[in-house]
Amino acid sequence: MNSASYLLFPWIHSFKQLRFAGVALRIVGDGFHIGVLHREDEGTVECLHLAGHLDLRNDLPRWVQAWIQLPYEDVRLQAIAGLCRLVSEKKQEMKYAFRFAESTITPTGDIIVGNTEYGFTCATFVLALFRAAVIELVDVVAWPPRADEDAKWQASMIQLIRDDPPKSVSREDIENHLRLLKSEIGCARFRPEEVAAAASRDEYPVHHETAWKLGNHIASTLRATA
Amino acid sequence: MICRESSSAVDDWEPPPSSRTQLVDENRRKRDEALEELYRLGASGKVDTAMDRMYRHFHELIMAKNYSECNAFLDDMDVERLPNAVLVGILTISYHVRNHVATRPEAFRRIEAKLGQTMSAARVAATLRGLEGRQ
Image 1 (cartoon, rainbow over the protein chains, first blue to last red):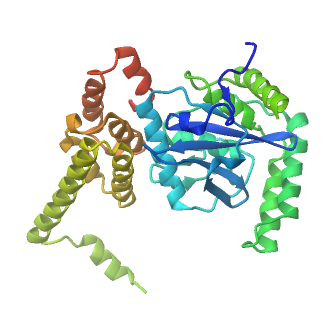
Image 2: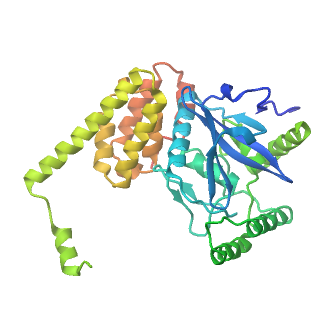
Image 3: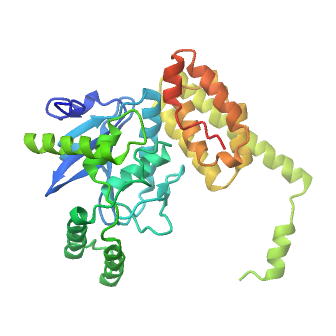
């Protein structure tokens, strides 16, 4: 594959071209941020994304640098878009954490965190949302931990939350949560570009090797055009 | 504070037959209203509004663990009068409570047949992938 042809740029491919649901990406430091684009019949396109600890947002996709059209039938996409609206209406508090295995979003838009998990990253929130739509985007069980590569990033996210905690949370609660996050350092990380790559495929679940290759391609294309 | 005796009494309590009839009638009325609204929205092309109303209706039923009404809804719905997207949404939201909804497999077959009126078998299979909910 020579170019990530499924990677669309808003200044070339307007969000008006979105068929009901897609994923959105932005470069953030050394990594990426991901959310789910959704559109009503004739309505505005919005993006549902976990922007940080206790910071689930549904906003206009002004921050988006690239997007991917989900390659499913329209009727399935409309069901996903409806689910995004349902979750955004619930306005639930969503904690930020790294480990992801069983967490999901229920059909009622409620967040269920797995027994050994504490929350979501932006990427695992997307995986959970798809799980609620009965689409298991990636092979979660076989996803390999890459501690050497990801531990540094995980530590930097902990520092980010420590430096700029949500104002609504006490220092004690933040420190307790950060202790849990520290215990997760080294766990498997689902990178936003890999989740985006999985979302570009109509066959799922996507295995890590495929997602990793396509994700690298997305990352290099996005950085080259930034 | 609720004492154990009174909790037990509450658990054992059953509404009198006349109340049960009223409850059944009320459930049926709500279901008929919800379905009629979905049919009307579908006929006027307001598919996403219909989707939102359907999700909210099921949200209330699932939150109340009112699975008998989920069953009745799937049994009563006229798939020919509902937009395909809403039908897929119904399979999506009911998937997670499929063990409680005995009418879902038959509803799946009716929806599959409805989609097959305008889509190839391969597209129907791709669209409904994972939603079968086989045990």
